[in-house]
Every structure is written in C-alpha cells, then in structure tokens.
Picture 1 (cartoon, rainbow, N blue to C red):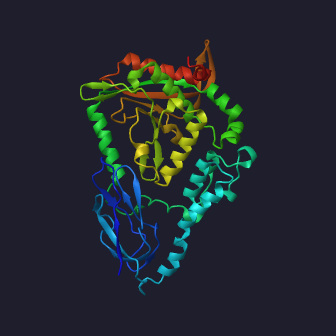
Picture 2: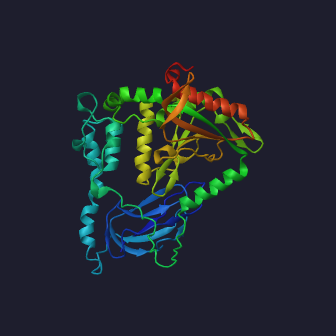
Picture 3: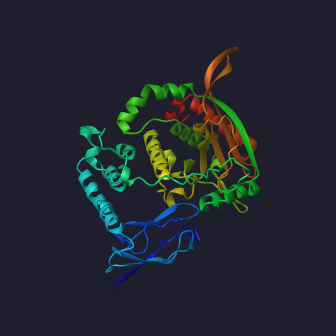
Length: 402
C-alpha cells in the first residue's frame, strides 16, 4: 500500500485559516493526479486542491465545512488501491477525469496560431485553438480572443448555490452561515466606517463625448483588440489623471504617517457569486484603454469562476465601484482600507439639464467620491472629482495630459 496525503495548500501570511467546501469524490472512488478533489474557501479567494497522485481515495480526514490551516491533511490516496464495489461510478468518472491532462496539448497546439499569452489562457480554459476565430493578423489568436473564448460546457464550474427559497405559508425562517468572503466583507466595511472620517462629494458628468467616441470606434476597437470597448476604462483613465493632479487622493494612512504612492494601482469592484471582490489594475497609468478593457474582462470572467488569485486582490491605492451596471442612480461608496478614497459611478440616463440658458436632454451620470477627511480636505476632494468630470466630458484631455 502506497499512501499519499492530500494537504491544504500554503495560505497567504494574512490568512490564518480556511473552510472546506464540498468534496467532489468519496472514499473508495478512483481519482486522477491533478484532478480537483475539493475547494478551500478563504476570506479572499477559493483555492482548488488537486489530487497529488492517481489512485483510490482511501480516506477523507476533514469533512465538508471543516476549519483548516496550511499543511493540514485533508484526505489520503492509495496509489495501489482499487475502486470499491460501493463506488460503481468511480471507474466511469476516472476516464473523463483524464481530460485536464490534455490541456497542455491544447496549449501547444494553440501556440502555432496564438500568441503565447493567448495560448496560456486557452490551455487554462481547456479550449482548443481550432475552435477560436483569431482577429489578429493572418488569423492569429490574440489575448483578447482567448479571454472571450468560451470553455466547453463540461468544464464549466457548477452554478453557485442560490439563496434558499422559503415557502410563504406561515412564518418560516432559515439560518444560513455567512461565507468567509461575506464575513470578511462585513468586517472590512465596519472597519472602514469606524476608522475613517468618511465624507462623500458628488458631481454630475455629461457622458455624450465618451458615448460618441465609443459609438464611432467600438466595432473597429473590438476587431483590433478582441475585446469590447466599455465605459470603465474611461473612468479609470479619468481617475488616474485626477490622482496625478491631487496625489493625496492616492495616499493612505499608516498610524500617524501619510504614505504617498508614486504608482497607480486601481481596484475595480467586480461582482461574483460569492460576493464583491476588488482585483487590482497594476500601474493603471501605463495601461492603454485596450489593456484596461482586456484586464477587466479577464477579471470579470475569473471572478465568476472563482479563479482570481490572492495577489490580484492585494494592495491598491484607489478604487472604483460601478453600481450603474445594476441600475443604481446614486450611492455613497465605502472606502476600501487602507486606501483613502473611492469613486462610485452610476447609471447613465437621459436627463433635462440647462446649457446656455436652455433646457436640453443629455446623457448624465452622477459621480460620488468618498474620502478620508483625516488627510483629504474638501478642496482636494471636490477639485479631484471636478478633474475627473472634465476629463470625461472632454476625453481628448486624457490624450494630451491636460
């Protein structure tokens, strides 16, 4: 008998423990090396635990819902064992489980027609290059093509468990424990409100210029870069322009010190089945509109699949939250500590406004910026938001850096 332990992967230094979700195999069933056995939920991400060896799952040491730490033994695999009669489906399950091993082949096949970055993404998704139409020169598959490619239905993760549906007869109740991510979100929001002297300033922006620019170039943009031209990239660029003019908006508080950051790592709030996550656009000032859109599309897809990494959600000097995608008209976003400011953007709607003494209809968006009044005065906050407004109403400013 050759036994191999299945261990909890190494967790980040900032994470002391995690929770096991649901075992995908039961004792007595066959498993293949690198087959995902269970997922471990931390307060930031969900980590997959693959089988370290092929064989029979001989024992589950930690049950669903158990609290675990780095290096804990979760289960044991007997590499010389045989599937038990109690698991008749095991042999059938073992065959398709070999599919992940074919993923590298997909990547190598893609390498002849796809860029290296695209080939890596296709391999991770398990998508054959032959099934993707390349938009690059000579039909070459770009990174944007790979990000938009759909994985085979069989490889898509199961849909998240929906909130319980309660009968309306009588007065029923059901108690459901918070996920680790939801509990962490609650903790950080309370921390932000208790530790920051938080105020919010508002302004409105006429989105006509951005909408005209997008309408004119969106088809060509998508063909060239393999990703749709959205609005978030314009807000990111406008925010960076304002942060450069008013560095305190990009600063953070550490005890009695103010840390001014000489870089612009912008967190973009993304909804996921597990809750709100905020992956970071590193060095956003150095990214093109296309690169920002590609990264945001990638973040959104991987947030839905629970594939974001800890590193991608750590840090950040300023955040943007877009409630407009859900139809929000106005809100007061909560600062993401240790940052000192956050921009909230909302739904763009046709509204009656006054221009040159006349009432006209314009596509308006209400901006809200919450800031920590301990280090940011009203002047910097208001002028910073005005700078964002001006950049959005005249996008050429972003090209000329004025």
